[in-house]
Structure formats: C-alpha cells, structure tokens
Length: 620
Image (cartoon, rainbow, N blue to C red; front, side, top):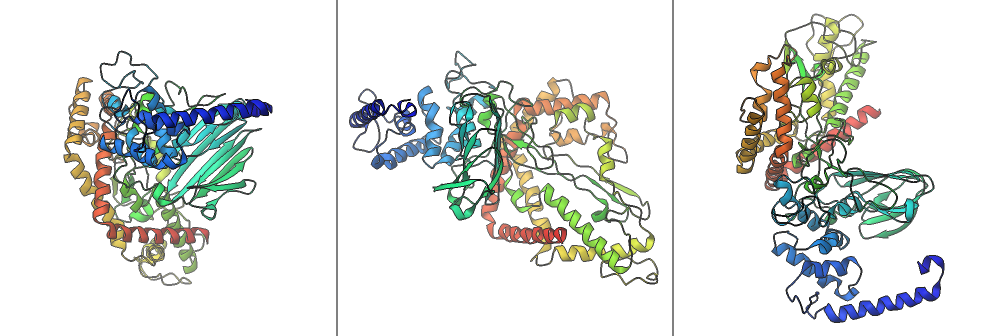
C-alpha cells in the first residue's frame, strides 16, 4: 500500500521489517540439512517446507535443497501429500512454481488416502473437512484450495489489480493435461483463457476485456520458439515462457516449450480423470477466482473417435462413407469435488458437456488420424478425384457424387465411443439409435454419376471410353487420388492397420484388468437396480437385438430401450465407469508405445507425410 501511494518512508520501514523477520525465521527454523523443522515437531513436514517456498521466505542458496527435500518426501509417500489446511492451500502451487508441475499433477490425481481422489473414489462430490472417511463435515473448504491451482496454474489466469485491470496468464501446470479453458466475468467484461497442446506445440488464446491489460506467458523454450500477433508487446523470456503484454482484444499465440517441462510420459505422471455432474459447475468455485468475478469450470480434454457410415453393395466405401468422430471431454479427478464438467461439440472445439462419463486422453490417438484429419483427408480425396475427372473430359463432375446405381445397402453401425453411450441427452431422445437427420447429412450432396463416370472414377470401365474423353488412370481417379495422398509414405498398410490392431488388442487386455472388470460389474448391478436387464458390458446393451435396428441402422426407440439407455449412462456417471476403464486402457497403451517405440515412430512419420499431402491438395 505504501508503494502504491508513494509513501516511501513507510515503504522502506516495512521492507526492512520484512527482511528482519525473514532472517529471523530462517535462523530459527532452516536447519543445516537444508530444510525446515521445528523443535516442537522435529519430524519432516511437507507444510513446513512448502509454505516458506510459496511465500518467498527461502534464501536463494537453500531453494534447491528445500525443494529437493519436499520432492523426496512426496516420492517416499507414493506421490501423496501429508499436509493440513495451510500446507494443502499452497503445496501444488509451490511445486508448480518450483518447476515440478508433473509432481503436482501426480499428487492431485492420487486416488488413495490421503487425497482428493480418495474422496472421489468413495462417491464424494464436495470438499470434506478432513481426509479420513469419518470426516464430520462433507461440505467444507479447508482442503478445497486445490481449486485455486486448477484455475491459476492449470488454466493459467491470475488476478492483478482489483477488477482485473491487469492480470497474468501463466499455465505452468500443463503436465498430463491436453487442454484447459476458463472464463471470468469481470466488471470490465469477460476475460477468458484457453490453451491446447498438439504434439510439441502449445496454442494459447487470451481474451482481454476493454480497459484491461494481460501479461501473457506463452509456453516456449525461448523467444524464437514463440509466436504472438502484431500488437502484442514482447517483454522478456523466463524459463519455459516468452512473456508478452496484450491490451484489449483476443490474442492467439503459440509456442514450442521445453520438452522436459511437458514430458507427459514420465512415470510420476497420472492421466486425467473424470468428474460427475452435467453442464457447468453446480456450485461455482470459491477462492482462487480473484477479485471482481466468478469462474466457470476449468477443463482439460482428450478424444476418442468411432466411425459410422454406409457402404453400398459394390464395396466402394471411400466415396460413400462419411466418418463421424465422437468427442468426449476429460477432466481432472480433483475437479470432481468442485462439481465441474467438460466436453466437446464433436468438432474438436471444447464445449461444456457432461463429463461423468469422460475418458482420459488415449496415447494411441497421437498415431491415428483425428476426426478433423479424417474430414480433411476425405475432402482432399474428393478434390483430387474431381480434378482428375474434369481432366479426363467429364466436365461438371460433382465433388461429392452419388453412385449411379442403388446396390444392396450395407449399414455399419458403431458406438459413438468404445465405452458405449455416454451422452445422457442423446440417450433420452434417441436411446441407442440416432437422429435420422444426421443420416441425411452423411449422404453425398452431388448429382448421381453416369455409368461412364462411375467406371472412370473407380477404375472399372463399363464399355468403351466415351468419345472425346481420356482413358482413366489405373484404379480410376479415386485410386490416383489415393496414390497422391500416400506418396512418400513408407508403409501404407502399417499406417492404417498397425495402431488399430494394437488398439483392439490392448482394449481386450484392458477389459480383463481386475479394475475394469470390477467397474463393469458395478455398472451392471446399477443398471439392474434401476429396473433393467443385466448386461456384461455397455456394448452388449448397445447391441441388444431387442432394439430392432432397421436397414438404416436406427432403432425403434421403445420405452424400454430409452429407459435402458438412460440407466446405462446414469450408472456410468454414478460409478465413474469410463474414467476407470479409460485410465487402465491409457496405461496399457502407454506401455505398448514404449515397448514398440520404433514402429510407432515410423507410423507417426508416415502420418505427418499424409497430413502434409492433404494440406497441399486442399491449398492448391
């Protein structure tokens, strides 16, 4: 206050007193062994060491030893905390500020005593007063200060002046998280932060309200590895960050951070977990939100896709099939006690949605086409094929043609995720079926081809080449398009089949895991207790012949089907079935990648080659 009001006399007096207090504190409690103890409690205490770190009380020469002692004690306890309400309030932030966000993440996501996950595993959806299960209060904020870490360190925004005239964005706890997003309604307007990591690049978007200024810390190894739009003023570089000043507006930045900061495959890390509930926070967060506003949910995201489509009797899937990729949000288990959710709109953009059924991000996704990749691949194939057809003389050939005949229809139905139905709203409306309007959207929007056009496209000429037209290339224009997109790929069979086959094998192994089997038994019993049939697994419920699927793959949506689907999703939410299932699957996939890293790396290089070819085809 003295600094702000220009009272230099009092400022200097208080600074001198603070230094004297700090020196006396360290003389009394900082031992020769490099960490803090008290005579009253001579045993090592995490709180006694993380609190001085958090408040800047540790001398520069002792920071390394104090931090090392804290890390050693956490590791000795199996990545568990051993703090009360004061130490808990700063532990995760102190670890993140000291350059160990992966340890903070490991502590935050522990599912055994003591920790937030211990509560979560036993049905808690609020903050309790004590770690033991006999806690007298189940709605207490003593140990709920993890929420501040989620907002300020995982998502990144931290308050500056009152009313958010200035604020800082520094997501320094990204370990084990794919993306995060949060929004604050300040007196100046909405302030928002979102970031995502794809491969080695972090994309950071900061929305600054009118009359405010943000200091954006872009994750980057150095200034050269960071990018910010014109108008953002470069200030300095800090370890792991390039710092910019950004006035009112929306700023989209990117950077390549130091890999050591973000190595999500380190053994100490734990995957994201899921949280119960639906929509935004049921009880908006308290504390850590700063002055002048109220935060919404903080979310991190992973994806899993499934394919739905149709194939006509000729087997020509590439032109007839349309790929639909389902997206499910993922949320830290610790967010569950705050009652927050995450999700996606199915197009790669994070949107609020129920996340009790949320899955962790699966490592094999890095070696497969994403939903957006698949859409672009199809679009590039269609573009190249259309150009080829026009070059052959078939002017006016549509980009998305219908087949020239109506062969026998083969409908391929698939669950939106490998865990079965996860969308409660969809279950209520469509049961195990789908909105008929979605089927229509998958149909080609162009005119029907003539027999000659179909033969030229697929490489199966039906009679002589029409006068004035060129002879089609081998495999037709569709085959030529595929060859161009796969040019430079070392092994196309490996690219398309290896990750899928490994995924199928690992999924079977995960289903045999005792943790998943126990989770499925609990889910099945829950469905029975709601008055419906017992199924061994959610996919059995999805495939029940009683739903009487028609030729289009859709169901009849009887009352019993709708009730079963709702019970299915509700039981997954109540017992966190998907969270456990996907956590086990992620563990097995991570181990498989380590065991076959050379092959996976080769797949990844071919995948990058395909993406580059797709980009060139679309941009041409």
